Image 1 (cartoon, rainbow, N blue to C red):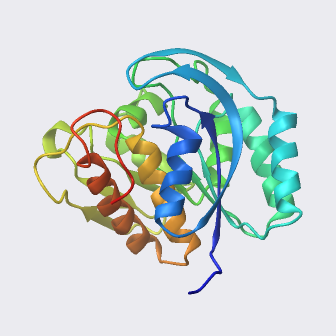
Image 2: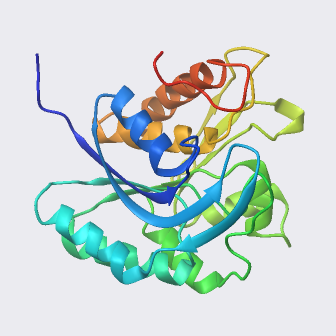
Length: 251
């Protein structure tokens, strides 16, 4: 048996229900046979249907967690969920770049929880653009991409974001083509990922699972298109693993 696994690191919040955030990411990493590291960015008080509060971990403690891991392990792929602000995220990304040559950053830009808790209430476009330039891929859904640039339509927002980074637009909230995801590469190429079936059961944390699945596949050196397809297939199985909001990973 090959004991050597590729490494992948999640920076995300702790969810006591273990459906989203760090727990979901680590479960997904393990199922993809990569070794998952975790850096906590927030302590949340929530379950699968209710979000009560979020206590942010300081930038200094986030960077300290990263520093002790990066001084020992050659981690090159990072999946990032909730962080307190784009300004803090930019400083975190600057630190990662100071320690890792050409890191692959997969950003799942969670702006609002499924129970409408707002993580980013004020946006700074210039800082956000600097964040995007440091990301290899972002994974918004249709609701999130509309929140990113409320003054633009979806096509205009995609064009704007694509100047800076690759985009995997999740189609779980796309009424005209439910479940159809699209990968927009900076070079202008587009790849459409059709859903495998008509029925899926909604899951708490499915966006985390998809983004961490992509990160895990990239850590295994798969090309971006194949990494996204495999992550989508895995997420489809996760969505249909139960009939309730908490999915299983032992597929």
